[in-house]
Length: 132
Image (tube, rainbow, N blue to C red; front, top):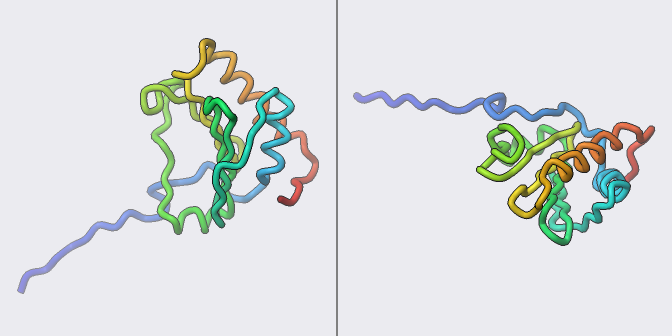
């Protein structure tokens, strides 16, 4: 009789950088608009909402309840230095909001990354998250 052993990845194998939903898509839209970045809806699932700007420089994902995200099998891109993720992306998080800058599409990636960081920081200045 042959025995088979399987190694299953636990949910902790792909940890999320947040443990509770703090922000909604409308919060992200307002914060980025305050930095001159107009986001529009790209897609909406029960566990995440994807937003992006018209030039595809910035992609923002607002993730939902962590358990629901984990059940989808989601795992994030490998983190690295700015503009090195997948060879050309900068990946930044604040709470349940992830912003990605496509450095190949801009002349001054540092300025765009700073703009994204200011927008993400502005999320923290909201006393209460609005419903979307």
